[in-house]
Length: 246
Image (tube, rainbow, N blue to C red; front, side, top):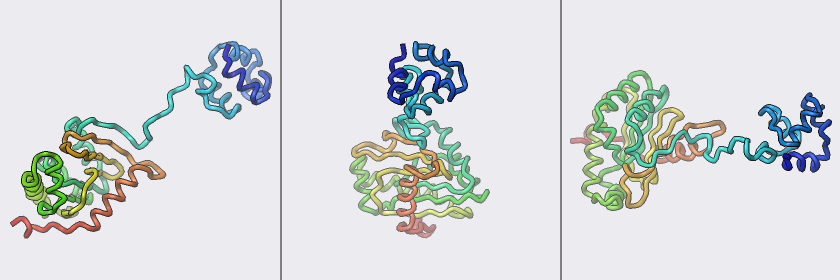
């Protein structure tokens, strides 16, 4: 006996014949459902709609579990190093409008000549490339180095190295590099509507922190928050010129 269905029918003051008429099935079929036979999915959905309840309220053992993770979330990686190298390449390769990198150094990408070549190729194809790195002399960068346990000097050196490597893209059209003095709560890697968000955790190197892969939906939700943060920092940042490298 399906007591869930029977009780829902009683609450709605409906008889099996009423359900049968609505679904265009035999009343005996509805009676079998009440006795415990499982309807086809389309009939389960129709009954739930008729009774103004969720399918899970009527057939809790069969209904698909509700999605606990928002639709925007495509994947969650426990550590940045756990993101496959191919995922970074696919992210940037997929861009047709814009690629944005907001971080302190992202030296792991800057040291990958394949990634730099890919960014240059996308820029030549008309994709706007924005690289936003920390100011190596900023106290925020020094504090991050201390928090990660590598020291302020090491962190500043990493940023300087990254600036030199990303600086090789400066002569390519559609590429702009800026430096910021912001306390970053996340590093953001954007390719059009796809984002990889590297969370920053106190005392934890960025490579050890989680990464969330988001895809923008309509209407915007979580991705809009991160994109707004990116634009705010970009607007306040200073252009990085070749002269600063000397």
